Image (tube, rainbow, N blue to C red; front, side):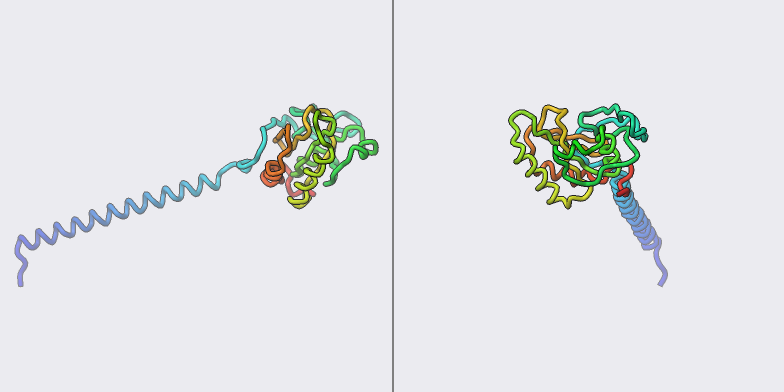
Length: 199
């Protein structure tokens, strides 16, 4: 049976609509895929420092200096990075009584520890209205809860607050130490440094 002109036109029109629908849905699908890819790529390109806590501290130099010279100068007190000695201090809770047995400029060694991804609790028992025992217990508890890895507590009386925490290029100061925020600082900032895989 032979098709009429009308049937042929209807069939051609239907095929044209089908092609247009296919193109339209393909275009929409492709656009959705492009949007998803763009979102995933922008997420993966987020800076490594995203999520870190504390105020940013500019680090003008990370050079090694001779141990017989004063390190620094530093852009924060306590230091959050900068020139330092070629050796570091190991993870530990340092007491005030340890200071007499340590080298003259401990910050030169501590900044090297920061370069290796450490977080340092700089505590000041001489700050006004500070209960030293409670302060130390709070710091020790946070250190224990976060695994005591790459963590140093160090007495630092050269500040007017009871506690400051630093990681490489970051500082967070506390008038009233808060263990929840202290723990977050450790979890977000530890290993965020130029040489995080160094011991």
